[in-house]
Length: 173
Image (tube, rainbow, N blue to C red; front, side, top):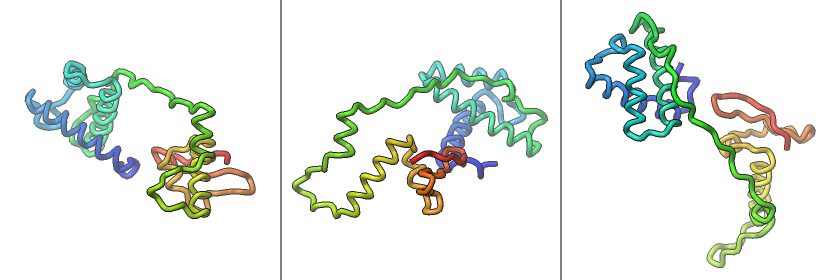
């Protein structure tokens, strides 16, 4: 199941579960079967009292749901105590849209740095193309970095990209 997760997600989920197990051990839980929904809720309340942000609490709940689903599937407990676990919404915010002059500065004005040698025209074109594609398509940097030659369809002016969660999408160029 962990094969579906990005390496950084797996790292953070592992840390979340490790922190929970350390907290739960102080309360007497020594294995997954010792945990119930009440304990999970108390843990989220504890996270709130120590000042964790709602997004952090939401992610911790997701980590624990994933862990307990795994534990149940491997017979480490009779039923998953996290099924009814809810956490505060992490909220979301949209990125700030660049103003016209900011966009012009990024895309059209050459970087003037006296200490750097001039940029070869091919590299300048590549860099400008990257900025245009990032801004115009709304791609994440990681999505752009993962593009392969076969993902580019110039005839239809579109790109096929792989995003978070290994989800594929097509974006216009």
